[in-house]
Amino acid sequence: MSETEEKLAGLQAKLNKLAQEELAKGTPRDQIVQKVLEKLEPEERELVEHAASTSGGPQQCLFCSIASGKVPATTVYEDGNFIAFLDINPANSGHIVAIPKGHYQFLSELPDELDAAYMKLIKVLEAAAFQGVEAKGVNVLQNNGAAAGQRVPHIHFHIIPRFENDKISLDWEGKKMEPAQLEEIAKRIREKAAGQMKSAPKQVVVQEEKPTDKKPQKPTKEEQKELPRVRRRLP
Ligand code: AMP
Ligand code: ZN
Image 1: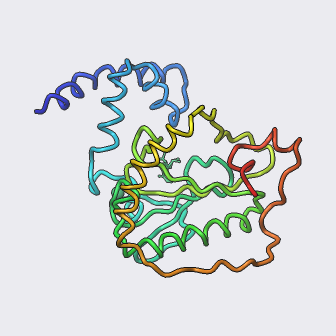
Image 2: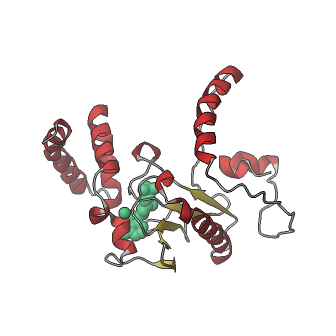
């Protein structure tokens, strides 16, 4: 047993006890994990989150079980490579989760051959979400790693329909950063990105302006104060 596995085994009893306490208090089942994590020491929490995000493979993966049909889901689209289904605890009505059927944790692990079809599916689902539940906006989110909020370690996009004043918060406090700091960070990321993009298709796509009635109008100043950051950034 590795040192980490030993520590985790030791933590198991504490986790079970905390979960039992939450159950006894009447905490809803879908909130128990969060409540238990909040009660752990920072290093214990880090250990549990790291283990959750890296352990297990296809055999223990919930989304692999959905992809293979072992676990039922409310499917909205399926083909040989992908399946999209309604989130069991939706942020809003029409919240879709879209996954590749193969087991990969991080988006960067998706085989390049699937890039275009996956992006096409996300585009199609974004439009379907607008139309299907008459949304006024749609967020497309994708979490990589426990620190980024990824609970199921299998690539997935969230497609979340949005409505005016729906009280979903995606806002964050912008950090202050000097131009020199930005440039320093950009330099490090730029080099990595350029290297990885060498194998990307070089075709230039010309964007045509198409009239559309789907996208919302720019919000007024008053509305802007009420809206989440993502919506405020619309052109
Ligand atoms: P994330 O937190 O980004 O890993 O998202 C995982 C999502 O999967 C959450 O929004 C869950 O509500 C959702 N989820 C978990 N189990 C199921 C399930 N059996 N069917 C559908 N969605 C699920
Ligand atoms: Zn999986």
